[in-house]
Length: 326
Image 1: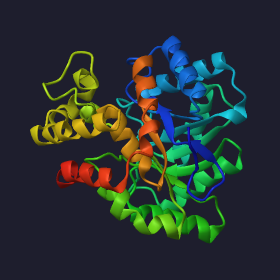
Image 2: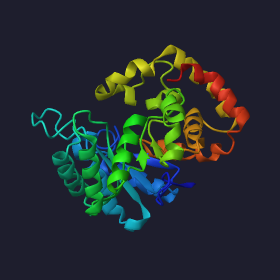
Image 3: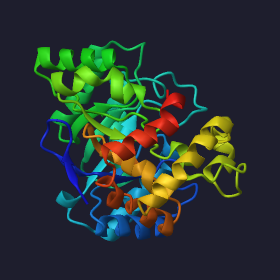
């Protein structure tokens, strides 16, 4: 396993990490979580990603129970969570969802810590930007959470470059804790934000990246070329919004063109896609997900392909996919 600094800060995270979106509680119980987190840890993974909204808080609870069972030294692992959506999507309290105001954030961190059973989390993210709350209010609340020792670093997820820079400038001007990381979607068909929009931020403010969906929700595994298989992520009713993209004919044809490249490198389509994301030197960690131990182990095998991605191989991958990338 490789370890990379989170942007310019001193925290080092594994190049591949394990996330809980979709899987925990929905597809992965506590016993499975313990098994997979142990396997990931044994392979060198030290970063485990979560969010308040995942399974309505039950994902945090499941990961927390697994961490208690595994009893690793606290210094040996990094845990993150994200705030914005809230827990109760059907609730009518205006300050409990779709917001980054101070009232919500200061209570959200306490709720997450209780569900995890931890005294602090290492990373907290603003899960989306909030156009209705002044950025100064959000930045100060996130900074205060760190000052209180409830989190160590903070960042954003799916924010525009302009919004990230505005938040960083506010924090810098007031001497508050600055955002150090962004968590964007990044895969072969979704590239422009990471490769173009954020370009100035890497050098100007030292932005780190923990990217999600390296397999485009499974599209880049090739399993959706013949439709949506039973038991897959695309078959879940909660993931119905993904189906059109997963069965896109042009993208599935591009995936088929990647298959011989993966085979030549001695890997699978999924390993090739994960390795491609990890190859980007701006990426601190690629967040992977798995519903089964075998899937996790296969994903971790992607690290063996990273050094095989020569400029010539990368050019072939671009020729197969770049025209369809957003």
